[in-house]
Length: 338
Image (cartoon, rainbow, N blue to C red; front, side, top):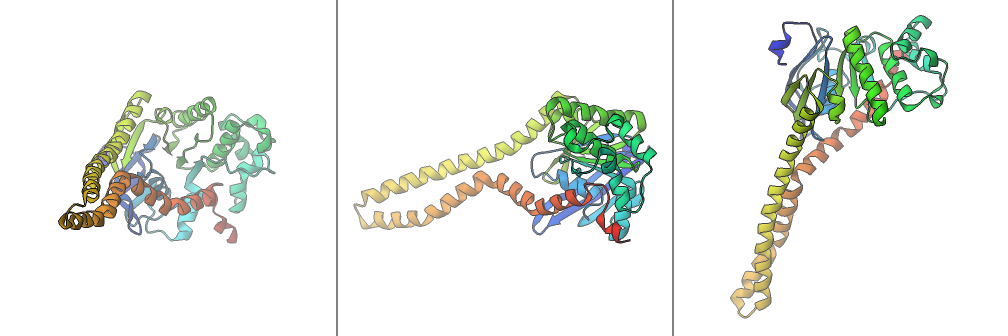
């Protein structure tokens, strides 16, 4: 769905021409995206395509280098850090691959913790209502160690939902779960969208997870490459295979070019061994002088795509990890100071 299509209904999240640079790495390159209120959108793409950076910018965890981001009609890019913190606390929920629960606290206490840190302690009724929404009303007094992985993720989901956020953002929320448990969590997310109109934006690498969404947006090299509406598993898997194949094809072309360079090098080696005349020796000397360049070219061509991915991943890893731990309990610790 384009921005024009989404304009006919309320838009919960909107990105316009968003770019995000990390020194010389372009993580996002002019992204335009509109997420309709009450819809479920999955973000997919090859490694290093900008998925997590897109989520961080959309959720106000990171500031884009240029462009604009709106959540619920509020422009984020011009807000002070304090106002962005308040907006994340009050209007945005987060669920990550790691559950980030406090082992010594019960499920109910973990759900209430963000509000307590922000000085807005939720009532017991609100906490139990959040647990009931995820099917854990009967586990309120259990600590994380007494719960299964799927139950712990549902506690994390209840923690994100207790403030009734306008948008729920998930970064690989089923990545640490087994197949059966992940399907239960995905079905719950789908029920929240269908039954309560909970706007949800989820980054995932799993075609099955993406098939639970209303729409899948595919990123490549920091740009929106394509979309699928009403996706099924086969469609999503096929599209991802095509995108990965495109990248693999680039690597194969580099390898073929390197093979040609290898033939030239072999001829040069043969000439050096003959060494019958001074001219041949001189030629071989020149051949030897370019061997290192040929080897470097072959290495560069063959791993170019992977190097680009590594640069992006390494350059944003520290920020993404910090963002996960900072907002993982859906309350910014800077609010405690207030």
